[in-house]
Length: 308
Image (cartoon, rainbow, N blue to C red):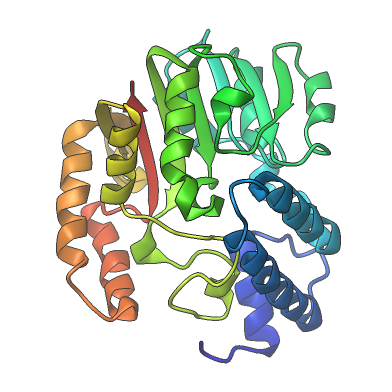
């Protein structure tokens, strides 16, 4: 870990969490966050299947109650623009039944409900989300452990399951079960669309603020394309794709085209490039190469669509 303090630390922290300038952030607050998250991470990783949901609920309730500034609305929360509209594109046009794992502040699922989808949001804690249901008659809310989804929702009930920055928070032992749960609640031909940080770009949790090379906070594990495809295949999924996005600057030259689209060939390209970059060490050098590879469309955030 590289020592970072003072204004540089505060600037890195604000950037990592998209904290608005009007929200007070001090070095003491950041250091408190750092120590608390490391402590909670130890509890999460040490949890057993029999008490995991309880431990996760307790830890995340503690995190967001003690670090209240993380709940402040940010410009990205309010402006449900390009990013959220892309989710709608990859899910497919409404009407569709959509279930979100780990809805957080509810920005994405609220946007989708407002766009005509029949939506159900969820969280590991019981205290978040109910107020959102008042905004849209086609939005409901439930609780989940994030893993055994079919124990909380009926089988074959949804056209799409989605999660945004959730998979990296799951206990690593639960990844395959998470995919099995998603598979079970999808209708035939349904799609699981998710976003999660790529390991080569990470860490992307609070560890990033302190220039660590591995996650030490509540990103319990960050994954590669290959690991996620293998886990999804074992769960029963049979079709894999990633959304190909041509940079906006290029699209502007051609009247906004080509629009982002799901592509199996592009996922194959990403996995091949990932294999090559994965031979590089140490991690700091691999991360530098991975970020440079953005120029050849190697994305640092995994967004994949897996059909059953």
